[in-house]
Length: 364
Image 1 (cartoon, rainbow, N blue to C red):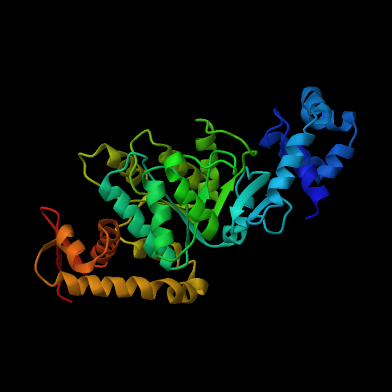
Image 2 (cartoon, rainbow, N blue to C red; image 1 turned 90 degrees about the vertical axis):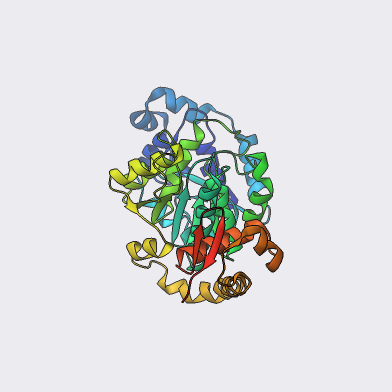
């Protein structure tokens, strides 16, 4: 799209006080932004009122528009609008699609079949391991893994997808030029290189509490379903799950200990009708294998590496109970890498976890 047309979209969306609902009213009434700004005050006032019309026509945001155009001119960065052919169809199907998307990385991934994985920022090690393993398994099948780049479950899901050679999309609650939280900056840069970072917020937008629940509708909207791994009863992940249900997406939850506060949100979802899952296969079967057309390609790229690592690990384990430390010494892999592979093997019924942090290979 020509810079002039993009500038009109930016001019519309970079006016404080003209939010998404007002923007959609204007677009429905007048069409493209250039038509909106060509309309007279009387016509505009009839749609959005006098106060909003004054803001629309009298706000000078040229500096912000120029800064955004300069940002989008950099390699690997672009701005998508509702009329753009590259705008993800999945978001057009939700009631309140963002007017603009600022994208760092591979914007074409936004059209790929996807599953969201969300959960607690204060995750347990088991929860992070589950998120990582499920993300790796689903990414290996061709699904893009969508999450919010937060600490805990989100970060684990992104890492699992990348480790499997798959793709992941981070939907953030700040401007796309800001990487938050600071502890995930290295991860964010890897996602920008191999996946995509997406924001609806103008450049420079800082982290604000109200932004994160708002971005959750994009996480669920981009996805065929949402998997909640761990969540307290008041977790923002339950907001994402609710939005998914309202958008007609599937909601999945992993059960946990009845004694764990981080499991209570998942158990509430299960009581409300979310689908209980124990393996990635449960999700794929429920979704009707949405990536059948890409599965062969993704397996060719990702599965051999994972399969070889799992086979080598089984050889190192033998059939006697063994600890993580023993496997670190035998395999040369890190404890984090081993945890992901072991959980995948456990989900596949090839390894059993035993008391005392030990694992045992099962006879095939």
